[in-house]
Image (cartoon, helix red, strand yellow):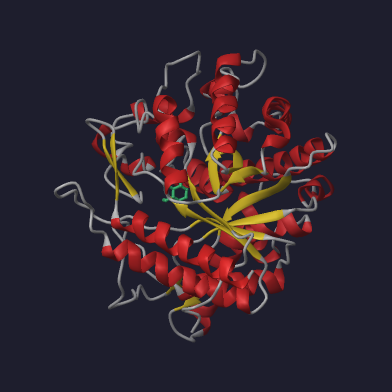
Length: 442
Ligand code: IFM
């Protein structure tokens, strides 16, 4: 195995967060409401009736949070911009105070030697745009492009990488079909239409940013999964291929090939909205990087079998470190990108703060094992250039409220006190060790 694998000297070691999950300050400095503020008000949608109004109060505590990242010896920080903070109504009037916040944040990163990796859309659509149809309205393609250009105009090339969308599957499927995310719609056709508009918005935005002659890297972030049939029966194998087409390839194919995968299109047949194949081609803009969020694999049984005797996180997700190896190898073969980042990888556990410490051995093992398997893929030639652990802080885990703790830093939501968990210390030491290897090699 690759226990002593040495990551390259310019490998980015980072952590990731997103605006709605940590910022709080929902009514501060002119921020407009987002679909998550509205969704959280709907009874029964969020565990415990919680919301992101205060969250980790990162809007006010950002300096101390950046200090934490610097203190861990990391070199990069992945964060997202809140569209309703920057353009409260979604289109039209820009809120300078919102942009000022990200301006300060980015300068704060640069002062601390942290490379800014920015995500434009991590799910917090301005509610005003939802009132106009949101992702189901074709006009959103230019609403989004204008928003992206507004952010770019202010932050420009201080940003190392711009990602258009985080996990569009979640926006389309969870938000518009299953209804477990904002805006809470339950209609497959609307979900498919939303996913089409997301692809167009992605492509048009890349074109618009390229036209600025930016030096920043441009790409997107997908949540991807190995999909395994439970048995070698034809039914299980077919079902696994279909699921793979629906969750992985539905998002990979447009971005890499400008098409939707045939298998899924045929499956959706009667629900397919009208899609212009010529127009869809715009999604296949050259990417500087593909961001991959890896958490678990799917194991597909048409007979209702479930995987037995596997370790699971507090989300109920199988802990499957080899999946990161398999996923990256397959991706590189089928969807070659010049560069990949692991933009999210991490786990929720039932952490307990005891005498000022959190002994989260399970998370330490999770990180160690995933990094080992990632190293193996890299040794075999997959060009992975960075790893962003999800997440810096315990935070608002969407429909689960604050019940699931993903952070390597514990947050006491009463006092907003941050405490490094053992996993944060382990990550710091691991990165330090890697730097030592590199120093020895020089
Ligand atoms: O918290 C989320 C994040 O917002 C997107 N990716 C998965 C994480 C864990 O569920």
